[in-house]
Image (tube, rainbow, N blue to C red; front, side, top):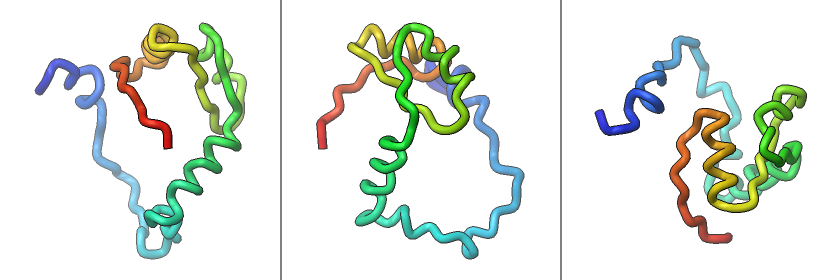
Length: 93
């Protein structure tokens, strides 16, 4: 029940759709395959940038990759999407 519980965690609900996990090929989640799989997803995603990023995403069918210039740009875009705005320094792989 922290300060962001109501906004970000309370809306999460348990899955109500039956999934046969044993029938699914989840090998792409194995450690040696995941990084490459995730990098490929990012490469294929349509890049979107600018202060009107949220409007642009509505006109794209498929995955998008949101680009931002700096911390303030990230925080503005995050607020448009209603996602957590906290900035974290990321180490480059």
